[in-house]
Image (tube, rainbow, N blue to C red; front, side, top):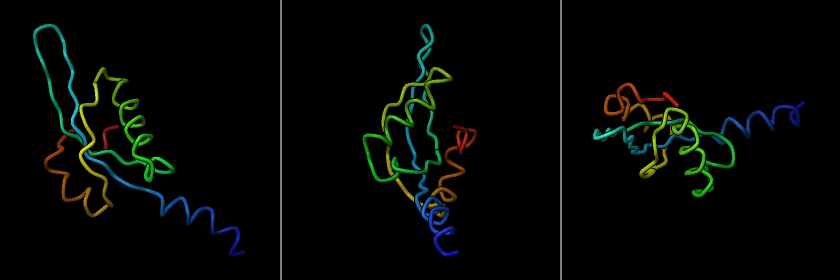
Length: 91
């Protein structure tokens, strides 16, 4: 029975949050946003994969990743919620 619980427990432990900056250019207007995103799996321990996943998620709304700022746990995400506003866990 312990073997059945291990995979689920391992995936729950492999969850992380990141904050990032993104831009969107439309005509003469440049828009910027700061966001917080939840990730899981190998991206949490692989910076290159992490950046690719963030960039792919925000690209669906024509945002371009400028930079991933940091990686943290749920407590860190909660501390950044007010700053991220509408982009807190949006993607």
